[in-house]
Each structure stands twice: as structure tokens, then as C-alpha cells.
Amino acid sequence: MVGSLKEQWFGNVKGDILSGIVVALALIPEAIAFSIIAGVDPMVGLYASFCIAVVISFVGGRTAMISAATGAMALVMVNLVSSHGIEYMLAATILTGVIQIIFGICKFAKLMQFVPRTVMTGFVNSLAILIFMAQIQHFIGETWVMYVLVAVTLAIVYLFPYVTKAVPSTLVAIVVVTIIVLSLNIGVRNVGDMGTLTQSLPTFILPNVPFNLETLWIIFPYSFALAIVGLLESLLTANILDDMTDTPSNKNKESRGQGMANIVSGFFGGMAGCAMIGQSMINVKSGGRGRLSTFVAGAFLMFMIVALGNLVVQIPMAALTGVMIMVAIGSFDWSSLRTLHKLPRTDAVVLVVTIAVVLTTHNLAYGVLSGVLLSMIFFASKISKIHVSTSVDHEKNTRLYYVEGPLFFASVTPFLNQFDTEEKIDEVVIDLTHSQIWDDSAVGALDRLEAMFTANEIHVSYQGLNEKSSTLLKALGQLKE
Image 1 (tube, rainbow, N blue to C red):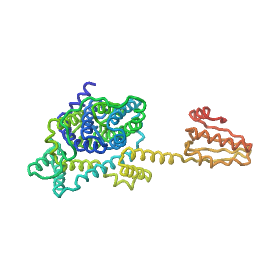
Image 2 (cartoon, rainbow, N blue to C red):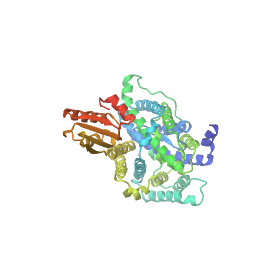
Image 3 (cartoon, one colour):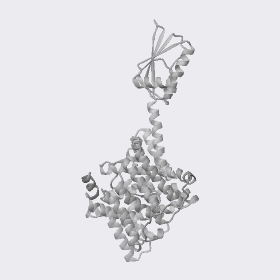
Image 4 (cartoon, one colour):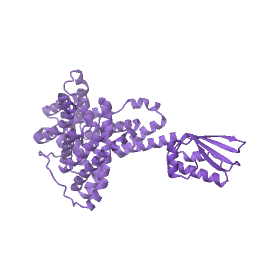
């Protein structure tokens, strides 16, 4: 246990510190932008990013993953802030944390096993597209100089590793481009243009809202939505980092950790947040592997705001835009374009729908939920194929029906259509040896089938029932066995 914690914190000190610094720089414009989306002061997003990153570094279940204020969470809070104000947003953030802790205790993270790979790919690709699209606004109203600086940033990011990998190329790119802009006094937009930064630490506050059922009634729908969206993005991001780093993560611990982080954020004037795949990938690609990288990202973010605020505001957006474009390019699963035509048609549809919904709604959770729901429908359709063969015992004037395939809500209609309940025979035997009765719809179908045969004075019997099917029939139906 101690050895594991030591490895998680100090197994990659240099890489974690340098990558954490890079992430901190990338977090500033993102946190400010997300605050603006939510309709709150820029410092609310910055305080949230600081609190969440620091707390999750201790209690999270996925090392090297960066959690902070995010756009998806900000979008959920817009109406709450506009209709009730920031105090209710803080209360909703705290309640979000409580709900996420409950989800973690109940081990809801196991539901992630029902997210298909095509939905994961759609999640990653749509996020990469959204990250790229978000950078376009930084070019609006700018001269050709902006394009040159972004090109220089990307050139350093991609070429500097050929010189040395001792220092993250993203950090080198930000520093070099900042020096170029300040030295030549180039007039391009900088971090200071995104919003006013207050050089002060967050302080503990209690949300100034009435502590009654009316307040709970107002904030609960928002908190529940925030909890779902936050965990969905966090656990999907954790899965992606698991694959990238070939290391496991504890999803239920991450759920509880996200809850704790949001509770702290709410009590210190911050908005609700979750894992950020863009910044997490910056962290990993810059060499971050342990908890120290996440801690440094949050701590250095606050250090820059408080101690280096005057310098931070001068960082050109061209440098940070270039880094985020690199993240978008690196995040997109380009192989999915080459293999799209080779996928089963249903998988291809799920992938395209997931991306389309995300790009239309700008909400990753909607896209993922749409993809999962569509996958379930396609899966139910595939396994609902049921075949009924038949033979006749003329001596006993009995017909045998042999059922093959699962019997559940999606297969009961084609199942019933394969029986002739008006045939002039004395008895029907239904063989369920190669079938499985799964639900109440299946029991209801058999009840209905027996009722139709009985109405025509045809005796019905069953054979080949396995233990689970027999137990379900005894519990829900009045069928003969």
C-alpha cells in the first residue's frame, strides 16, 4: 500500500512536475471560458479548477487524469445561474458532490461496461472536433500574425521532441512564443483579454441560500444532471487513459473522488467540474503519469494567478491555441475513418450518431447516451431472432414445437406468429430445451399462447425448461410444466 502510493506520487517526479506546469497554463483560458459560458465571474472557474485538481489528486481513482471546470458542466448550470444566481449554483455544486459519492458507494461505475467501443470512439472523435472548433474563435478579428504564431507553436510541439524529450515540447512552445510576442511587442490577444484575474486565494464560504425543501427542489434536478454528466465524462476519460497508459484505474473510487472534489469546490466558491480529456491528454503526452502531475496542475494554476498574475495575463492565446489544436489532432482516432466502411453497419451507425448528437448539442453526455441507447436497440434486435420448427405425431394427434433462441420482450411477437392455434389436433408440446425465458413479456406470451390453444380445446404441455426458466414461470405465470 505504502509502496504503491509512493510510486503514484514520486515515481515520475520530473515528468509529473513539468507536465503539470503545461496543463496549468492550458487550464487558465479554458476555466475562464467555461465561467463565461455559465454566466459567472472568471475566478469561479479558476477556483473550481484549483480545488478540484488538488483534491482529486489525493482521492481520485485514476492517476494522471486532470479534473477541473468543464464546458459540459457549465452548460448544465447556465439556466440555474441566470434564474437563481451564483449562490444556488454553489449549493447545487455541493449537492452534486454528495450524489456522486453515493453513486461511488453504490458502485454505479460498473455500468461503464455497457458502453460499446464504437461509442467510446465517437466520444473521443466528437470531443476532438469540439476542441478544434473552440479554437476557431481565437482567430476571429486577428491578423495573419496569429496564424504564423500558431504555426510556430505547432512546429515546436512536433519538432522539439527530435531535439530532446527531457522537457515537454508543449511547455517549450508556450515559453518561446510568449517570449517572441513580448520581445517584438506583437499586438495579439492574450490571456488577460479573456477576463479579469483577481490575485487572491479562494476562501471558505457557505452558500447564502435558505436551507429548506424549496431550495432542494430547485437545485436537485441540476445537481442530478451534473452528477451524471460529470461521472460519464470522467469515467470515459479514465477508460481512455487506461488504454493510453496501459494501466488500470478504480472507477468507483474515482466516482467518490469526483464527489469530494466538487463538495470542496462548492464550499470555496467554485463551480462543479469533472475530468477533462483534452487536458488529461496534454498531461499524458507531456510525460505525466502520477498523482503529482494532477496536484502540480492545480497548485501551479493558483500560484500563477496569485503570484504571477501580471505575467500570466501576457501569455498569447496563439500559444495556447496551438497546444489545443495539437490536442485535437492527437485525440482524434484517425484509424476510425479508415475502418468505418469495414465495421458492421449497426456499429457504423452508432459511431456516426454519437458524433452527430455531440456536435449538434455540444453535450458529450447526450451523445454517449444516444450511442448506448442505439447500441442496446441494435443488440436487442440482433438477439431477438427466434426460430420455431415443428413436427407431428399422427398416432397421438400431437404437434411438437421446437423453440430456438431467447424469448424476451423483443422476440415475443415473431414467436407467437409461428404457432397455429386453430389446427385440428388434440395436444401441443412446446419444447424449450434450446430457449431461455428472460422476462415477464416472455411469460405473458406463453400465457397468451396457452389461452389460445385452450380456447380451441387443445391441450398444452411444456418440456425442456431449464431451472431459471422454470423458476420465472412459477413466479409469474400459471403455466403447465
